Amino acid sequence: MRARDLAIPTEVLQPETPALDALRTIAESQLPGLVIALDNKFVVVPASQVLRVALPRYVLDDAALGRVFDEPSADALAARLAGRTMADLARSLEPSEDRPDHYVDGDANAVELAAVMAAAHVPLVAVVDDGEFLGVVTVNKLIRSVLA
Image (cartoon, rainbow, N blue to C red; front, side, top):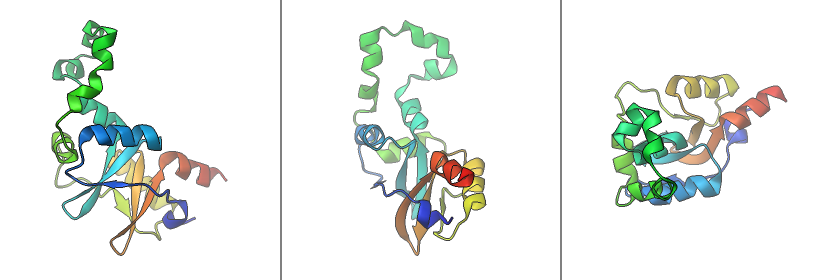
């Protein structure tokens, strides 16, 4: 099975997209991440990393400190994304020049998809043919196709 056959249509977010809108997109799509069009590439941002940006640094350094938040404060976690954009989010994830691509062409097979996911540490991969975004393949969909 080829990547184009497994691709799930989804929205590509732009760098100027508000981070709160991205959080809503994750909730509505139920996908494990987002795709951003950034610097003529398609970059996958795992949903967990969107949450990472919303957390205070001290909680990232020591998760046990998350207990100091009462429920109303924890419920306001999304508000920490207010005023931030997907470009801000992408920058805060410390991208490196040598990171592997997060996308494949439509002819990619299951092994190629798995290799990109594993090398890039992402739960989904963008599928792009001749510069046209076709959708994403999630790790769950890939596993189901391999087991079929």
